[in-house]
Image (cartoon, rainbow, N blue to C red; front, side, top):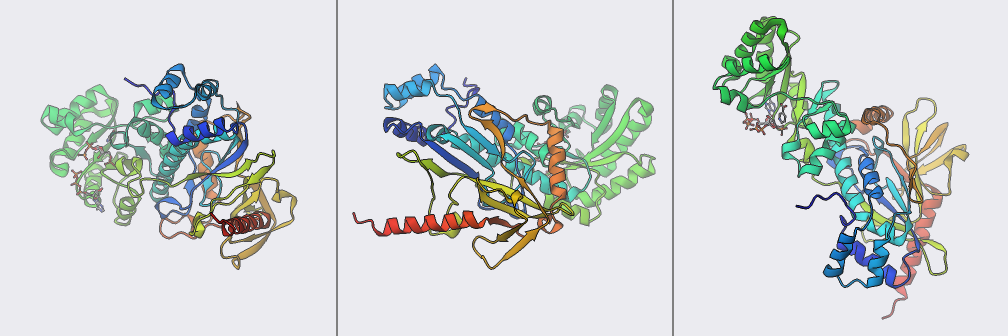
Length: 485
Ligand SMILES: Nc1ncnc2c1ncn2[C@@H]1O[C@H](COP(=O)(O)OP(=O)(O)OP(=O)(O)O)[C@@H](O)[C@H]1O
Ligand SMILES: O=P(O)(O)OC[C@H]1O[C@H](OP(=O)(O)OP(=O)(O)O)[C@H](O)[C@@H]1O
Ligand SMILES: O=C(O)c1cccnc1
């Protein structure tokens, strides 16, 4: 049974095929820079919450072609013995700069940058995109749900519906980054230090044949009790049975709550609240689950549903309304035969798909007086807006949309993670990351945070970066025009 402990071959075949070409053409040590970015924010949201860095770090640290991997490649491909030997001794010696988990990130700006030999940059494309695309998507979905529930507790229930094991585990962690409070997944709770939470299923009630016996048995074996009250009839049997058990058990249990899992949640929650209050259980909470997400929750809030705690599974963990974030990994600079680095570009008839050449940095520009966001300013890596008194920010496609910003703070988004193969970054605790994400979100204007049709957050290019892009597009245009095969 494969265990997938080593993820080195977790890459698309074409990456290793390109490595083989670089190797056979003696280009394997040429220097290159690649950047990760996405072109469109997910869920129509105004921002995305970056997640996945911890897994990327673990993946990079584990990179190593085992003898078994080499044997497999020998029989599955026609790679030369020399290239296979090269792979056997492969080690990641590159430099990675990245947004940190919990950072807010936007379309068309680099969120991770890999610099190293062209071979090592090429190998890691697939896994980096796989990890960052999924985790950023889930953290962003979680953040949308958090925005709608306010301060209500949010429990992550998605494991049974996640796209397999790894997604359930890393998805739980990403949900916490986006603002969830706890997970039902015991392994994720243990490995990532997430608070664990859970109630019970309908099977408990079914196995006893009635609500009362099931709740009584549960109460005799657990101190904190949340009873699932909708197995047979919520108002006639479920809630009255829960109240009877709570009355009988008195101080021997903590009657934390009841959970609703079907039916009209607005109507039921109000009636259940009355029943609990009338029985003297004003502090007992109403939990709700059943295919919820930010849209259902917003509707329930509008209907003044009396729900205190939310259990969210399927629609969060599968990113139901947008199953993929389209982050891509593009080469932005490469060393040529003369030893000089040159910026590279991918041209497209679609202006949005033309990549921005050159190794870059993203600067988060905030007003130094109130700390509020002004926009992101993408520069070439040798520029530093902190040296300027004012910066001119303009829309890269509609340049007449522009502003001059003074009294600003500029914070670099891409921070050093690996330096020439050495890990130089310590991942904070999950709690710290969640806290950081919350703080970052607080600095964003509400116009960018609304769920529906948010304002577009400015991501602008510096003049130098924009001029560089235009010059390179022009050079490519001249090159294409003189082709005469
Ligand atoms: N008052 C409400 N307003 C808006 N959405 C609601 C309301 N009550 C329930 N929902 C949501 O409507 C969806 C369908 O609920 P429905 O009542 O059909 O489920 P159910 O059939 O009772 O449960 P199940 O099929 O899981 O046994 C669920 O996503 C649920 O969370
Ligand atoms: O609804 P979600 O957001 O995915 O949350 C997880 C669901 O998992 C459980 O249901 P179960 O698997 O027992 O199936 P059910 O839909 O029949 O309740 C639980 O009762 C929730 O409804
Ligand atoms: O603890 C719960 O209530 C739970 C856990 C997973 C899925 N649904 C519910």
